[in-house]
Length: 144
Image (cartoon, rainbow, N blue to C red; front, side, top):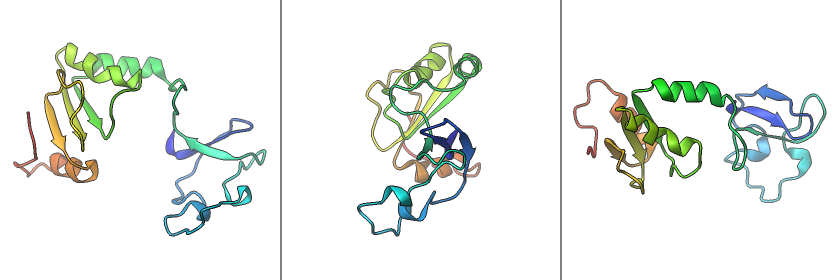
C-alpha cells in the first residue's frame, strides 16, 4: 500500500491508482474550497468514498512481521522527512543503531533524539536526497 493505492471506506477494497491527482477536485490547480462528495473518488465496487492507502494514526501497519525481519537484518536506516514520533516506526532507527547499524536523517529540522543519528542532512528531502544519492558528489551537506 502507499500513496498510489486507494482503500474503500465501505467495503475495504484496495486498488492501485497512480493517477495524479486522484480526481480533478483534488488537483493543485483546483480553486474549489468546498468540494462536493460527488466530486471525490469512489469505489469501483460499492460506490463508497475512497481514501489513500496509507497508514493513519492509531492504525496498525501492514506486514509488521516482514518489517521487523528487515529491521533486524538492516545495517543502514534512512529517516526521511519525519519527526519520528509515532511507533512502531519511531523505534526502527534506534534499534538499527543499537546493533551497530548507521542512521542517516534527512529533514528540515534536527531530530529531537539524535543520540543514534550518524548523519544528518538538513533541508528539504527533495533537495538533499538527490545530492546524497549521486555517486560523484563529495559535498553532500551537513554531516555529523
